[in-house]
Image (spheres, rainbow, N blue to C red):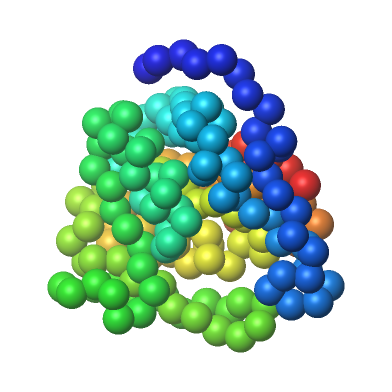
Amino acid sequence: MRTIATVDLKRFIRDVPDFPQPGILFRDITPLLADARAFQQAISNLADEASRRQPSAIVGIESRGFLFGSPVADRLGLPFVPVRKPGKLPSARMSVEYTLEYGENQLDIHADALAAGARAFVIDDLLATGGTARATAKLIELVGAEVAGLAFVIELTALGGRAHLAGYDLVSLLRY
C-alpha cells in the first residue's frame, strides 16, 4: 500500500444549501473527486479500513459507492460487486425493498455475486439514515455471505444511520 501525504478531506466537501429541496444541506463530494491528492487520500483510507477487516470482496452501492469501491477493490486485488437499483442487473438476482425518508426503493445484487461464506466490505459515499446500507447488508446475507464491515466517506450523524446499523462494524472518514 503506498503512502501519500495526509490531506484534510473536509476541505474538499462542498456544502450546498437547499439541495435537492429547501431545508436540506447537501454534502457535495465532487470537489474531492476533482482533486487527485484528496481522492487518493480517501481511497487509501478506505483501503486501509477494508484491509484490516480481511474481506474477500468489496461491495459498492449505486452509484457513488462505485466511485470509491472500485479503486479500493483494485488496490487490494479483490473482486468488486455492484449493488444496483432495480432493472440494472441482467442475470438472476436477489432483491430487497427498503424505506427511505421520502418513500420506498429496492436494491439488487446478482445471486452469484458472492460465494457462500465470503466476507464482503461495503463502501458508499454517504451514511444518512442507514436504510440503503442496511438493505445492502441484508442482500449480502441473503446470498450467503458475511458483512465484514461498512465504510462511508461521510456520515451525517444527526440522521442516526449508525443506530440502524447496530451490530455491524462501521467506519466513516468524515462526520458532520
